[in-house]
Structures are given as structure tokens and as C-alpha cells.
Length: 399
Image (cartoon, rainbow, N blue to C red; front, side, top):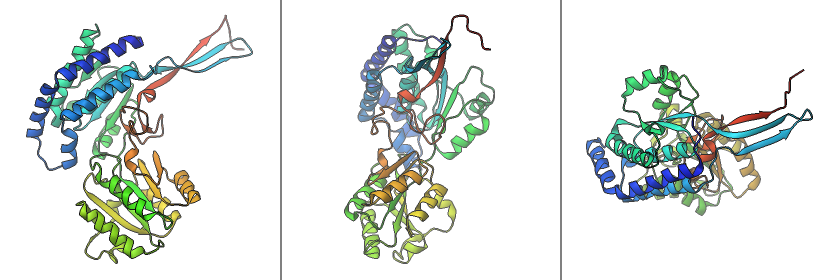
């Protein structure tokens, strides 16, 4: 694959920013076709589908942030000269061709492509049919930006294939594929893992937990829970489960206060057996399946727990490995929680909504990885490269 210099890549990104800005009305008009065709039976998916003036501004800003970042390719990781005189240099290098499969969000067509391209990768974009018109016009914008800078369309391509054709492509790709990133629900991820023949980096489900310790600052706790649950219900970093330590002072009154605050925000509350004795009018969960569920809705499960060890075990059993938070004034307790909870991001006295590339200082993100290889958490520009060894000798042979 050709290695493009930084100026060339940045020129393409500047062209793309100009083109999107000039065509924003056309982009919004095409998105409207998708919105009109969408059956609003899934509010979270609908919210992700919307492109308005603010979303277009966000696309432009995402491109600018990546453009302004240092080129991640060709950076020296290590440089060692052995006693033999052999010089071994380890540098960052592009993956090659990345495929991302995603549902709904047209802004992924921007964010995924800008990150892959700046890291000198080609990218194949497989968006959902619900965003067809939005994705097609954004692909045309990318191709115009590439053409303005004398580059082929093959750097950034939207895959115009259906589910069955996608399945066959994963089984028998017609071109080199080096990495696949499925970004969506468990069905999509399972589909890709079943059929893909190359490396798959999982952007897993949310199903995020927050533990209210007996040592929690209650005023801060209410504020954090409301933000984590209601700020953006379609986000994979939204809160799903609240575990309240039954040993907290004024336990029953605090549970009732939390329920009242959430009800005022139109949040549906379901409870376990322990909380049912306090919130008798709430639906009690009937089985374990709900513990694994990512709600993506104004819905929350409140449950009773007895101490930190039980909490750690529950979160590691049921969560998606995405984000988990503890509310406590006890730093030692927080440290144990953060060390032993097996999630990509762990929080002390903060909302899970910060698990985001922009919020964490990474910039635009391809996805939030819940894998442990090769990276965990927001996949930003620096995470879309692999490494390569350059070995320099002078007739060296191994003996």
C-alpha cells in the first residue's frame, strides 16, 4: 500500500471539510429521506440516524480534530543496536484495509473514514440500510475530496451490498482484509465473529453499572446517576444498572428519593427483590436475562447489594465490559473497585458518559473497544496503526 505523506492526507481532510460545509443542506435533505422511511419503533436507533445542522458541524469538527493531530504512521516505538551491531527499529505502520460494519449513525461514515485514512489505511464502510441515502451522499463527498487531491476512490468506499452478500464477503473476501470492526448490538457482533476470516476487534455492548457505596456522597450520587442515565439514552456509555448498598444511612428514604428524581425524568424503573420491598409499585425482574441487557432507553434497573465484593462479582458476571462507576468517599474502596472490575473504563465519582474519544482526549473515535487485544477503550487515531520492525545489518548471519 502506498504511504501518503502527512500534507497529502491533511489536504484531503481540508477538502472534505469544505465540501461537507458547502453541501450541508443536501446532506440533511438526503438524511430526511432515511428518517421518513424509518419506523420509529426504536427511539435510540432513530436518534442515532438524525443528521441536522449540529450533526454536520460535529462532522466537520471531527475531521478538523483528526487533521490537527500528529500523523500516527512511521513513529519510532523503539530503536536498539545490539552488541553484534545489528540495529533494530520498531515503528508504527498502517493495518492495510479496515472494514467497519455499523448500524444507523451516518456520522460514523465520517469519523471512521477520517481516522482510517489519516492512519494511512483503506476503509470499507458497511452501513445499515436505514441510513442508505445519508451514507451515499457522504461517500460522494469523500470521493470528491479524494479526486481533488489526485487520489483513487478505493481509499474510502461504501459497500453497496445486502446482508447475504455481506455474509458471503466475510466468508470469502474478494480483496485483502486486515481488520474488521463491528459497531452495533450483540446480533451484529455475533454475525461478524461467526463469518469473518480475519482479525475482528469488538466494539461491545454497554450494559453499564454504577455502585452506590455506603460511603457515597448522596447529593453527588443523584447528580451522576441522572446524567449517566438521561444525557443520551442511545449512547453505549449510558447507565443501565444501579446497585445500592443496603448499609447506606437512611437507605429506604434514599432509594425513594432516587426513584422520585428518575420518575421526574420519565425513566422507567425496574427492581430486584430487595428494592421491591421499598418500591412496591415497581416491576420486579423475573429472571437473570435482564442483568445482561443493554437498555438503550429511558429505563433503569435498581438493585440492592451488600458490600463491595458482591458488587465486583456481579459486574464482572453481567456487564458488557464497557464502563462501570463507584460513588464513594473512601479512596481505598474506590481503588479496589477500579482494580478488580473488568471493564474498559472504570470511574470514581463520575458519570459513565465520559467513555468517549472526544471526552477522554483521544479525539474522534472509530469505536469503543471492549476487546483486550490490541487495544481497549476508545479507538482513536493512534490506535489504528500496528507496528513493524526494521532490521539493519551488515552481512549479519545468525550462529
